[in-house]
Amino acid sequence: MPVSQLRPVGKLRSRFLAALEPADRARIVDLSGHMSHAVHAWAERYPLIRGVRVAPLSLSVAAGGFPFTTLEALISTARLSLWVFTVDDLFDEGHAAEHELIERAECYRALIHREVACPPNDGLATALCDVRDDLARYPLFDRLGTEWATALCGTVDGMLAEYQWSLPRASLPSYAEYVRNGRYSIGGPPHMWAAVITADDASAPAHVEHLRAMEQLASTSIRLANDLQSFEKEVAEGQINALVILSRALEEQGMSAPAAFRQAAARVQADMLSGLRSLTGLRAGVVTDTGHPEAAMDNIARFVCDFYTHHDYHTFPGV
Image 1 (spheres, rainbow, N blue to C red):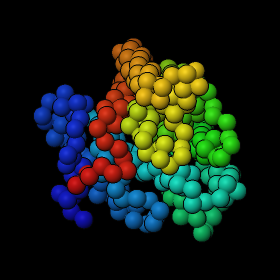
Image 2 (image 1 turned 90 degrees about the vertical axis):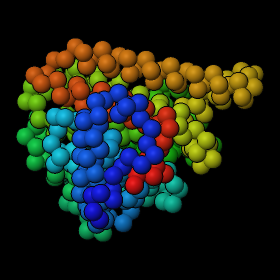
Image 3 (image 1 turned 180 degrees about the vertical axis):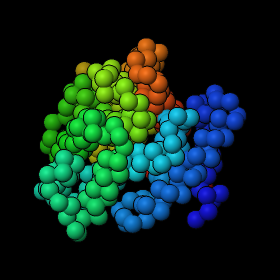
């Protein structure tokens, strides 16, 4: 498919991109087009991966890594996040039994840590091994690969926890518990560490605590932005959501459903914006040699939170 047919802007509304100089905005769009072309070609090898996500995801990754990350590195990060989207579908859509999901989670955790060989008949396992081995080519993987692996295992575990919370008769978690888990289930931590690894700042391993703090803020903000956007969809599908948890608690206290929803939405919005402000503060206190790891985390969080104001990655018309 020609790159010109894969431009992921279409009807996009983005304050993040609108704030950039026209030349930078055009360069990000161009990068994302080239990324889409390459990622589509990769995704076609794996039938479970949905191509509709490629264009908006490519734009998100390009915005996060511009102008300091190479096209090859951006593609590596995008493939990882596309795999995470696909596993999320597996856990969310109810087509697999609980025992199968538990077995898959165990297999994927073992593959992430290279504890077992890649099974021959699981396309998602094969895609995971491809993503893992691709990231392992980058020089910083030797020193930060454990952070990435722990983050991706946390994402698999987070998805399994959300699936189990959504089962009939399961108790809802508290808002704080849900948000702690939700930062992983949204796929933020492995994406952030992949972005750090591919940004190729040799000083990054010396500043892991600083970068962990930024990852937590970025991933949590993205989770909350997603929940604000997807509330109706997740209620219809029987999934839990930050707004569902807060609204039900308020209704149990006697508040009407509409008022409870408004108060819950205001709380989630305020928490998301607070997280983004703190994230920007950590970016300003740059500690790495280039500042690229900090910029990548802040950029991706801001772009995605803004994207969720108007769009989602499941239906966005990216061509």
